[in-house]
Image 1 (cartoon, helix red, strand yellow):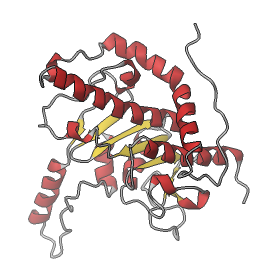
Image 2 (tube, rainbow, N blue to C red; image 1 turned 30 degrees about the horizontal axis):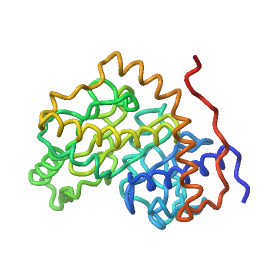
Image 3 (cartoon, rainbow, N blue to C red; image 1 turned 90 degrees about the horizontal axis):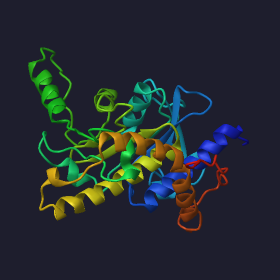
Length: 289
């Protein structure tokens, strides 16, 4: 079946983006990336549960389209999808400028989600992570949502009250997805998830993948810096607000360079198959001096 060129290009990019995230240890069998449908902004596309693992997606048949409004499948006969697709639907619903969402369980990021509620947020420590913004990435904690759900259930006069949330730390409905989405701003597009991982978004697949990879790298560097500082996060030299502002501009102008390298890395790895053909080379950016 012939696909419209804009859809074909996005699917080719989406397949390879899944592979890139796996290659750089941001996802394993779990974790996911979505893209807003290029021909219908009210829909988004994400891999199905089978094959599910990002390394294994390879053709259009591996994806499902969902409505942004409620994350219900466009095709009512669609196969099983991700239970956490509500992360993607609610972030895309809140931010019309967002076209791609990445959710990761990076082992380099999760330790930064495990502190107390007033723990130091993950702030950018090098120029490639300036997109994290002033204040950095704070932690979304679902404990209060679980407590509120339990209280509502116990106080309900209904003979068959709804059961409280299963405390599996998954974003499995629109209510939880919207609560997570509220923690983002356009200036702070990364949110850490307590005992779980993190989510980020971008205006394009390339930007969202860039933000995911450099969020992970920033956490790796920050962990080392805190260790060198004797465990005191306040002794680390973070980017200043002006550095964040100026370096964030650089991030946008140069993300294409990183993506071309990451794309080639997975193209030559036989684990990663792409039956839809390779994406077209995007616009070349860079700092024009």
